[in-house]
Length: 149
Image (spheres, rainbow, N blue to C red):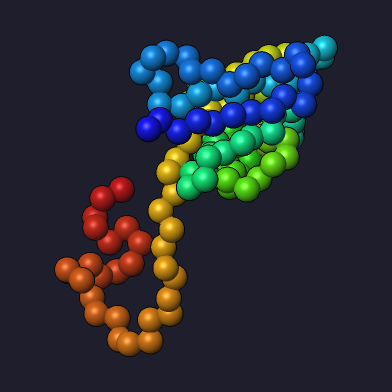
């Protein structure tokens, strides 16, 4: 059965997230600033309140990703790399955008600002291991030890 992800709008004029194409893996979130644009200065982080409260199905979480076009063309990324919203979060989603470029970026009303993905969670049992840890395979040297960049 296909899971249902719902959003409660905090303000009537807010755009609901939408899939750009039938084959899109993620849906787009929009800026909520209906009446004004905002300039994100180089190096600045700006919190965008989407005015959307998620109702996430039990056993799922919502993942937020940067939009590749904004990142490549304008240096606009998510300040925390990836946002993770738990199923029990019931407040407005705030998306922190960071301008990593040297150029000011104008955030326009109803601009697509991030992507969302509903992910089924796998809960792990987390234990402390007290024995000796044996090497698996021929990995030595730590980070980057496979010889690939």
